[in-house]
Image (cartoon, rainbow, N blue to C red; front, side, top):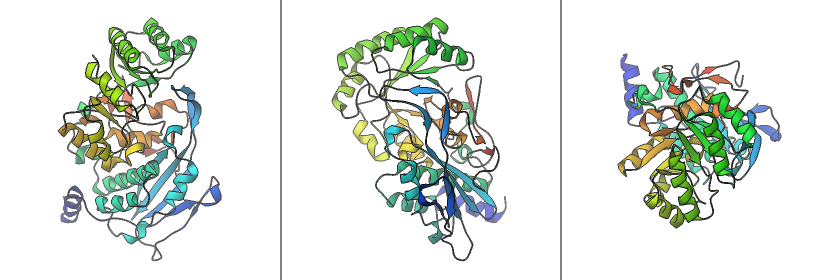
Length: 386
């Protein structure tokens, strides 16, 4: 390794200094308009534009249904290298394409000179507002992708992880009629080793029983805060265990911490917090109320904080899973860099859409396969933000 490359790598691992540039969504339209903040024409250039994700099937959880997911694609160019990022905004996050573009238009990377100082740069990005987590994640992912490419290594290797230890990913089956549930299960049962089932309405047992007509694969269930009575929820969890369910996400509303803790104390299955946890600072408040946490980059502001959450939760003796929203292979591949360090993975967001923009992390016979390509391991499928 050349001395210059070694110094950059060492600087990265101790967390260092940053970037330059910017573009924005002008007038709320679908076409980006560039605003280059670096007058000298050097350093990084951040550009972004909306991109709506088209779902293969209508996606239904306990609180809503949708056929599309709004998103914003991000790109950072620097000295001939390009880093890609993404913001995905399902309804419950409370963010929109307009809010993401408004936030990104405020990001001034031109004040920094070294992309390797991730802590400094991303602390600045985080300081621009108290929310906008998906927009912050888009910048974080693009910056990590860029830095990994500058070093020439994937992030799982920079974090010292073994890709062969990544758990199998679940594949999600949303709430639907028995006929559609059978169809969806037949489509995926021979391609995955564990399925995830959305529950939380009055047809939970019908959903599980219908899937069991088709396959005996292990199941994870996600109530998405849908259960209302803790004793009924606990009874259902005991029944679910008999049906081959191996874990449960977010049984009751996040505000009902005592009820979720009561369930966790008595549950025969591990209980994971999802909506109850967003960021690193939330971990102390859910410790004891759940067995584990579900880390999603769109909630926690990206890879930087996601990696910290993995290590903090482990230090507290908690289980960890990494999940995703409906996303292209960009954000899913970014989240997959964490996968060798967790207990469960739900990284199927790119498999649920018809208009992916990248090739990245792959699922082969149900197994997560992390590419050896640098950064987050992407290959663009065409021109992204020219």
